[in-house]
Image (cartoon, rainbow, N blue to C red; front, side, top):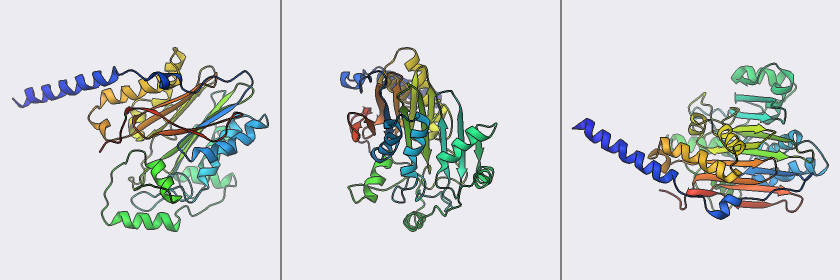
Length: 348
């Protein structure tokens, strides 16, 4: 009898997932942001704090600079912002009080570099670029990543700010570990005295298309707050948190990294664009693959993808309502758009 109940429950979940996967992307979501004219540039990034990051990247692109330089300079902004508790300096620590950073970067030639569980260095993105350009490796982690960074002249900094330490000590009273959907925006708004809520994780992902038609991307984070010591999410993993193919486009992700890793999310989005999907359609299909595998789990977590193809078309899709992304080009530098989503209201 127990086996029969298990079978019926599993079958029901499978039917639900199939039904969800069959939902159509709204027409306005399919269109996304239209293509650029030849020789124009554009930069996009996840979340509201992507506006300031995009502006820094745009200074590079507007002067005819390379997409690779643009994404590195762009993500430096949130990495150095002590009021942003999800990226770089001021990031919330793991459950033992250590702030550890993950980042990766990828250029138009397919070169890539990353660091994981890096401590004491503000700009993990630049260390990732140094790994790409100055070593035969793709990824360095932990103490080895720190040693390399110091050898390259990066300065050692205490990343645990008083505000982050206070939040950590408050969390220790209950030690309740529960990822919260869309916390990137809520944490940012709370820190800037805007309506917000409790904090938990996660990321800025950025994609740029320069005037030469070349693309690059970068993803950087302090990871989930209160994570286990040594936990690494999708952000430093090429193909999961970020992927760029100069023939097709690029994609980046946000949310619960474990689910993105299991589905090689950003690579999946790019491959779907290769086969003719628009950026939003590709993001939608990648999200639904996650949902189909774990329909019950995904009622309570957030995963979102942001993509831009070689024509400069942009789109995103997320499990939960609330994912937003920022777009910057010659026409407007401060656009923030809501992503299409599977669930149209916040789940509880």
